[in-house]
Amino acid sequence: MSAEDPTRRVREAAAERGLEIDVRPSPRAASLEEAARLRGITPTDIVKSLVVKGKGDQFFFALVPGDRSISWPKLRAVVGVNKLRLPEAALALAATGYERGTIVPVGSTTAWPVYADERMSGRRVSMGAGAHGFAMSVEADALIASYGATVADITEPIDDIR
Image: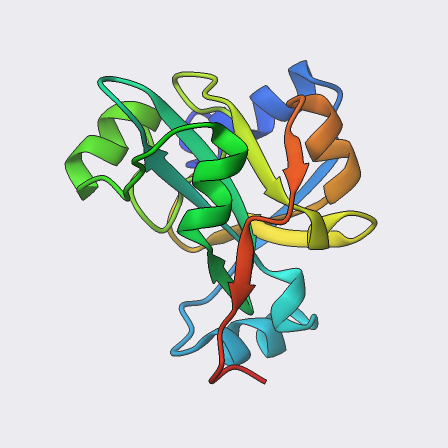
């Protein structure tokens, strides 16, 4: 692990938590299905790690299976707030230290609360690794436990994904 490793922060944060991850190069894909095919997994096993803005300077991570999207009413109910939104790219970067497309709770500059969709449980998932062109694989249950994530039904199906 050299100083030039763009995934160093993720790797070090995972090691500090005793979280076993596997980071690999991940070529840019034109679709979720292509990304899954390139990684040898299903679209459900790709997890989007989204930063969500609450009131004031409060943020949250929402972990969403690739074939689903956030259900805003469900997520608001679980978080216990009336308003949530996806922040602008600059605000997401300031809140996490990661650019959009690379965001992950592991190694975030602030340890915001994590909400994981219940469909992740019991799976090995692939998600961002803190840098463009890389993905990490991790046991979802270990990730959830290491961050004390709240596990709930926070998503809805995306109709056009098979």
